[in-house]
Image (cartoon, rainbow, N blue to C red; front, side, top):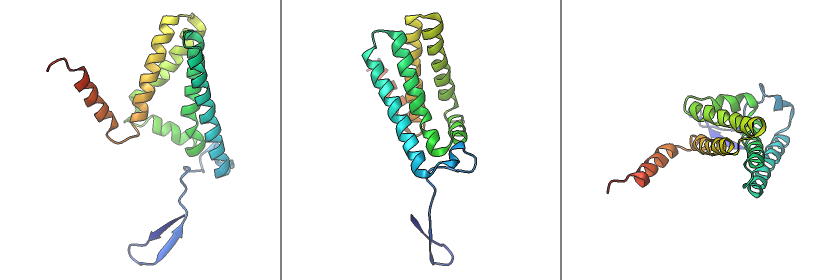
Length: 162
């Protein structure tokens, strides 16, 4: 519960700020806030478990791709429990992160096609590496100035001139 001091009146007004997003347009609106937090935690935990299990089969790129991609989808989608799927999609396709989102979704689809359809280990590995990089870049878009800092560090580390 937050206390807000009115600018004009000076009297204290207590109000509760909803940190779990706008509930009116969300299919999760029928869930209580506690249930939404449990859904978020369960989905995130399941995603992390799948990603950790993928490390066991890292030498088998197709199995690794399936476990890792499914874990990624669960982990990224877990925030939909907190803020709602509509708000999640609006944030993902915000102009700041639309490129990273498009590359991430494209690489997820390609990883699944390469793993399930084509059965190409090399193409699956390339798609997974692209998926990881896009997910990191997407995550950095939520931290102020993180992309700029990482870009500058990479330029400094990769600069061959001394």
